[in-house]
Amino acid sequence: MRCLFCKEESHDTKGVEHLIPESIGSKRLVLPKGLVCDKCNNYFARKVENPVLSHSSIRNLRGWYQVPNKKGTYPSVLGWIAGTDIKINLRKSTDGKLQIIAEKLSEQKLVDAYHSGISTDSDFSPFLFKIEIDPPQKEMSRFLAMMALEALALRYVKLGDVNVIIDHPAYDAIRRFARYGEGVKHWPYHRQVLFSMDAQMKRPDSGQWVQAGFGHDLIVTPHPETYFTFLLYGVNFTINLGGPSIDGYALWLQEHDPLKRIGVKLIKKVVDGKEVDFLEGSFSSNAGANYDRKAQLMKSKQRL
Ligand SMILES: [Zn+2]
Image 1 (spheres, rainbow, N blue to C red):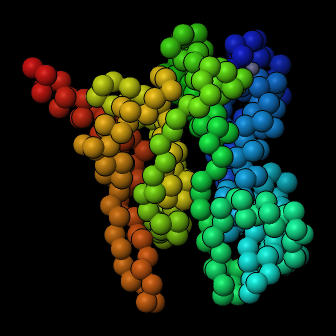
Image 2 (image 1 turned 60 degrees about the vertical axis):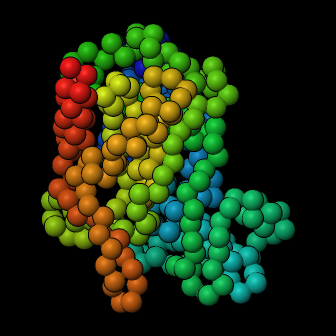
Image 3 (image 1 turned 180 degrees about the vertical axis):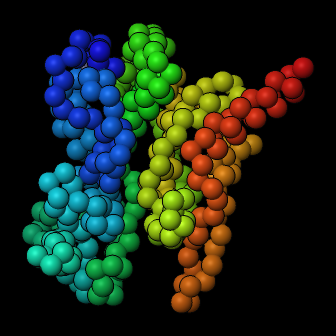
């Protein structure tokens, strides 16, 4: 096996790389050992994932939804209570219940918190803090670029020949941007709120209503171009695997609906006097790919 990013021999790899980092809640999607070598894996953790995941917009989200990091601790939530800026720490007590510990912030921490774009609520309730998901641009685009190439490679692993992606020059630009920050200064991505952060969805296995967390997919447009989408609590991030341009996706959006593509319908209902988003649909994993095939077929018929 060779590494997807540096192309070096990676048979002695010890670490495990997750497609979606564990610290935002994903334990399931593990990449085959060696697809990302230890050196690249460690680099990504420090220089790409950490700046995004420790940014207050995502950190608050993780605290809010009680997603522990790798060490099993909960990230703190920054907020404001009746004129005092505070940091809320979540801890799990011995009986397994979450405890909330609030502490006052120092001047410097306050400045950092204000600059992070968190909006706050004046009512005292830690669970009334509003969270915006808008992480720093360059780090976020490298983070998306990394996951995009991994998702594409994973698809080729399943097809039986991942070397196609490792050696293909068409992916060298995104590879180098993700791994070394080289090439362009900014690799643009598209950010769109598809549904509210506390939207509910029915679990396909149990039928239970749960919070819609995250998801990812590859979109092949009729052009054709390949895009990677990452849906994080209602915010949809999209990046182009073929080059630093998002124009083709903007065009695609004029005729296509990202939720319809994955077979999901957004329904608003009033629950206890509050409007709540519900996502209804099958959540079938190949709905998106089927949708793309149909769209391509329609396009080729139009051309005839
Ligand atoms: Zn490597």
